[in-house]
Amino acid sequence: MMKIAYLTVDDCPSSDFKRKVDFLLLKNIPAIFFCIGKLMEKRKKVIIYAIKKGFIIGNHSYSHIPFSKLSLREAKREIKKTDEIIEQLYKGAGIKGPIKVFRFPNLDKGDGNKNYPFVDWNNPKVRALQEYLRKLGYRQPKFKNINYKWYKKAGLNRCVDVDCTYDSYDWTVSDKSYEHGIKTLKDLLSRMDEDVPEGMRGLNFKGSSDIIMMHDHANINGFFVPMIEKLLKKGIKFQGFI
Ligand SMILES: [Zn+2]
Image 1 (cartoon, rainbow, N blue to C red):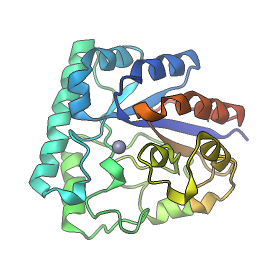
Image 2: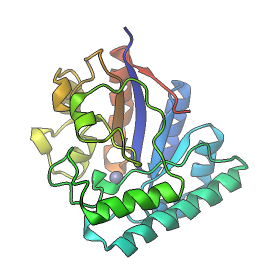
Image 3: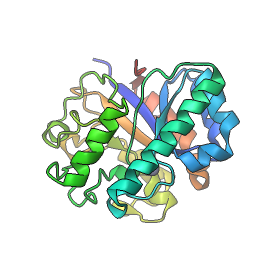
Image 4: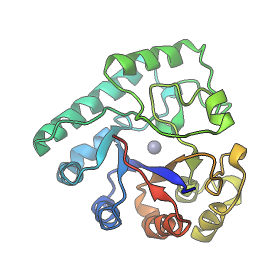
């Protein structure tokens, strides 16, 4: 059985964004780019370029402040402002947005992420944000065969926003948090060989598809291509979203 994965790239667009777009085009890999509103304002052209090439632009808030640190009103503003920017850019590309997708900064759905992947679904802010996104027309793409028990137990298959099943941890190197001792490209690549499906490292588990999260961080530019190439070498087939 072939391993299927969906690629998502967060915190776009950096100065390296176009190079990533062109590389994925060359490899025929579809992706959602979860973009930060204030960065898109600075690099409109390259977003329009990605839209025209068939990539999906997702909303990743305006300024990437974790939503547990914002009031509900501020959080909604972060979503709406970016929603409008994306709409304008699709208009500029002359293409109708195929789907509205949202990812929370730091995957913080408003409860501070204290027990990730588990979410406090009774938290009023968490509930209000899910409701607000739904009202704006956001939804998850129809991911097929995501079968991890932890993922379903946490409710990540039922939320309005897009979470992930494989966090590449590239961000831990770029912000020097070094979670789980990951410090180099080599560490990131060898983590991909781990086989702990119920511990959020299931790339070698054929019983489920994966939603992979990577980052467009300028200081780890050199990591993107080798990480994708490693995934391809594993025989992973990247799937479109619509
Ligand atoms: Zn982010």
